[in-house]
Amino acid sequence: MERPQPPAPFSTQRARATVAVCVVFTVLATLAVVARFWSRRLKHLKPALNDWLIIAGLFFYYLSVIDTILQVCIGRLGHHIADGVTPDQIMVMGKVCRIYFPQDARIIN
Image (cartoon, rainbow, N blue to C red; front, side, top):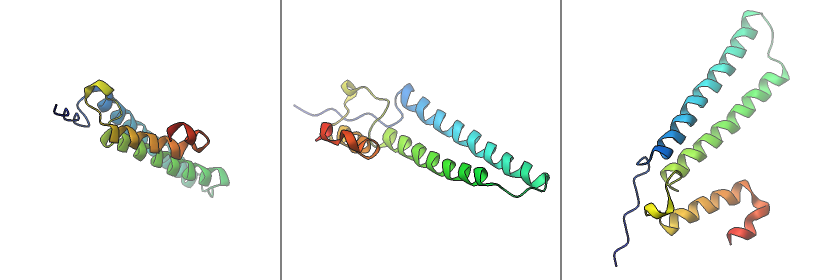
């Protein structure tokens, strides 16, 4: 019996919508931070600690978006398991969950 081919990464509406939401909100978040710094500059104010913490938060948000897009491309996030998602792809998603939730790592083993 031949194993079915895994679906293409963006072959479902859920996968495309996930990436679209990531891209749209990344652009909006970046524009908001740029506007914040621009308004500080127009008022001749130096950036405060909370401004720099927003930059750090934006960096971690970018990491989260990259992770989500990689899960769509590699782990087949947005696809039903009956669509031919392979056990290897399920393991990829499990390893990502292990990174985010190390206290639950025993569940994935």
